[in-house]
Length: 297
Length: 292
Image 1 (cartoon, rainbow over the protein chains, first blue to last red):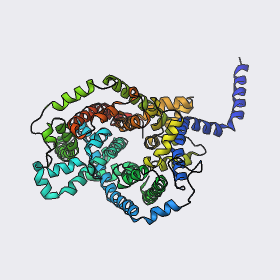
Image 2 (image 1 turned 45 degrees about the vertical axis):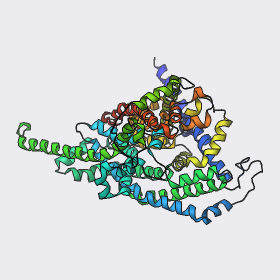
Image 3 (image 1 turned 90 degrees about the horizontal axis):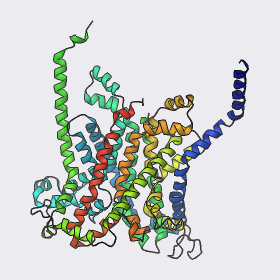
Image 4 (image 1 turned 90 degrees about the vertical axis):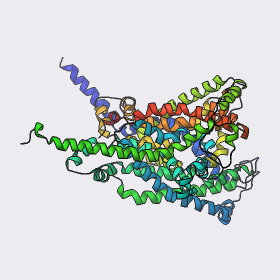
């Protein structure tokens, strides 16, 4: 009887000495194994097209040879980039879209946080309100394109509303432009509201109890409990909103790009413009992350 | 010493009153904001019931004054005369939606688990790539993407609806943020109890990511349910096309503006139902009881 446990121990120890050195390696293999389906899709359907579009930006592309592999399209180096910089119309559009997102992002995030905090409370009809604020995401796709008119960045619904006589007083007080802007911002913030709502659930309820016992008002408990807890999500949402406004299909840069893409021989210029735009976006987000780093827990 | 039954009852009553008052303020504020958010849907409903002469009024009217069911009748006529039976489009869309959402959740939760809880070489680089690709402009790579998908012979199959969207950076980014909130100790406890990595993922990570999963499902449902772009670009067999595509072909042309409103209205309902079902999972406080 006494022999058996000893044998077992020895075996275990032996096994440990062999696998222990490669423990880290096993962990890393497991890590990669779990991510592999995602990585394959990512490489094939994201990185590869991106790489091809970088390549295209250095060629004067022809329809027969979009990526300069067969030699039909002459290599032009940075000429496409130079063309983008030289053409004032492109720069104007890009600058305009940056300015728009500069004021939109803070408003969207603040509005989303405000609504999410309210929607977290217990009150009758909460589900109905949650559905109402989530309607824009629900209405994605066909319906969105139906609701949006040709004029860029505004919902035709809102301009229709202000133009129609039934809400004339609203129009007289605020004007067409502001109503459209408010509507568009509310419509842009539904994803952020959802993220905030999910994040708010992770704030321990006990903390609210504690500060309430200490006599904190709802206002104080928001600043000292809620906000510190959701601060990573404030940053996440800001980045999300930033990216969302930058790559939004209704962004003037996007319509310019699709215009260039469909022109046939301008694919290289379009690729160059989109890459410069992307790098500029990245720069803005990097600056934002650096600025907000100290507020992150 | 203050005993429990000596607690100031008046204070408690006042406190109750105060919260009631706050609740009313919340409802008023949300109603105001909600009204603006509701306007497009109201407009959609109104358009669906507008007779043709009201659709083309200038200046446009927001509300309908003489509601009719003409647009609905016209839609049923169009669907009855379609090349492929209407139910086939419906079947296609249900199939691709279920398959896409299932694999989307599976692939992204699996990828987020090691990204958040393991250390392996290349992890930081991978996550940086994910963050970078959030800024990825779809139209920049549209042409290369088309060539790759046709090169893989994914065109003209159901797979083309499912596969290209699976490696979704937004979904992974969100998932990882939620996963970071889960304490490592839970996984360590599981490991000490002898769970394998797969069990850790399935028995611990997946249930704890329930609200992240619901978030992703809500976010991506509308996109895939109303999908029409893929059908136009990659599918040329009419039997394989989606409901969203069929609906968008109906809406074509100025003469059918009212019908387009009706189809848009009909397409919206499943999304609203999915949201109502899933939102309780997102908001479920119990899901987070094991966290923090």
